[in-house]
Structures are given as structure tokens and as C-alpha cells.
Length: 266
Image 1 (tube, one colour):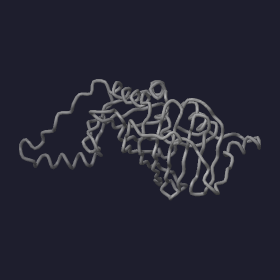
Image 2 (cartoon, one colour; image 1 turned 180 degrees about the horizontal axis):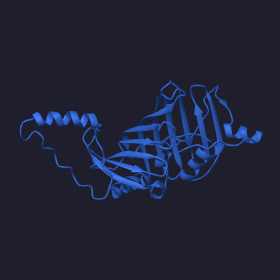
Image 3 (cartoon, rainbow, N blue to C red; image 1 turned 180 degrees about the vertical axis):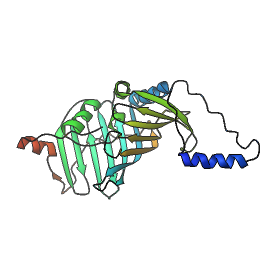
Image 4 (cartoon, helix red, strand yellow; image 1 turned 90 degrees about the vertical axis):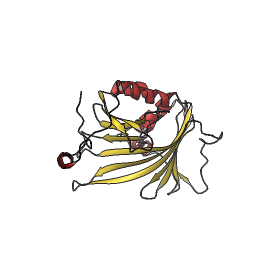
């Protein structure tokens, strides 16, 4: 069992000093509920998401970028993600620098549209979400944060990757009371906050890339979960706006030149 340190050492010393001066009974703490099986709670979340015929959520996220100076600078994005299984995805993207974009899978085609610069790339790729996401990330070298959570086989993928999972606490500072879990895979450390009651949809997620230089971190806050969104028939279809220019994916250019294709992450 891993012992979770909840406060920096200096804060613990300071609070201990205050406790000595506190009146009798002031040190009593609420009992921590026992979470007998954090694995079961995590699997319940994964299976709930993978089993949902459709859902929609807004994700506010931030990520560190290590500078040449060694300083980490945080950048942010907001995604409005809509899933309709087994083969539909729409992600409306807004970046902290003001750029906006769109990623669409309509069951037959992948489209990436930069609305700010009025350009789009499109390629044929029929298949289920997991197949299309793999192709989008690894063959096209594109990025789509949290793609793993949108896959139809999310529970099976996590079962293969997960090495440890521990209960941290029941958090009272999230929008709803959540069970805070900490886990590890062979590449990352992550934390996830799952509601104590109701639908087990994640409220917050953090990822630390412990093997990368500077151990950069990614975080995401999930808002406005809708497990039965009203979706029109053409919601996942793409019609190029007037004046938008079609361009190839970068990997298509590199293949034509005989260069190596970069690999995306999930």
C-alpha cells in the first residue's frame, strides 16, 4: 500500500504547531470512508463511458511545455466533445492563443479543420472509434488529448496499461463530492476524481509524464456532462465553409517525399 503525502512538509509542521495551541477536541477529523476496491470504481467509470451510446462534455485543459531555459510554461485549450458509438466523434477546439478548430469522424472520413486559418485536411478512414483514433494519432501524427477515454475499448486498454491504483481521499472541493484516485502505468502517473454518487463520469484528471524531461503535467476539468445529447443527422458531417482551402495532412506530404511519419500520442 502506498502512503499518500497530502501536504508539503513545511505545511504539516506549521499545522502541527497550530494544533498544539488548539482547544481540546479541535483536532478531531471526519472519518475517512473506506474504499475497499479502487480498481472496481475505476473500472465502473471506464465501462460506463465505453458503454454509453452517446455523450457530450466540455473539457477545460492545460498542459506544460518545457522551455529551453528549463522553465515550464502552461498553455490551455477548451474542447467540446461529442461521441456517438460506434463510429462518430466531434471535437470543437479552442486554444488559449485564440485559435479555433474542429475534428470530425463521420464513420467514413476524418476531417481536421482549422477555422481560424480557414484550412482543412480530410482523408477516407471507415471504422470504429478505436481504429480511427489509432489512425488519427499514430498514422497521421495528429493530437487529440484524452483520446483513450473516447475509445469503445477504453476498459480493456486501461486494464492492459494500469500497474497500480490507490485511494487518496474523498474530495470535498470538486463540484460534487468525488473519490480521488491515484494510478500509474509504465509511462505516466495519473490522478482522477470520480463522483461518490450518481453517474461515474470523471470530474477531473491529471497526468504527469514522469519519464519526460522536467516531468511536464497535463490536467483536465470536465463540465456539463450530457449522456443523452440531442444530435441532428448532419452533426458529424463536414461541409467546407466558403473560402476554406483543403490541404494535405503533414504525413501525406512526408510519405510523398519518402520521409518518416511522426507518431502522435493519446
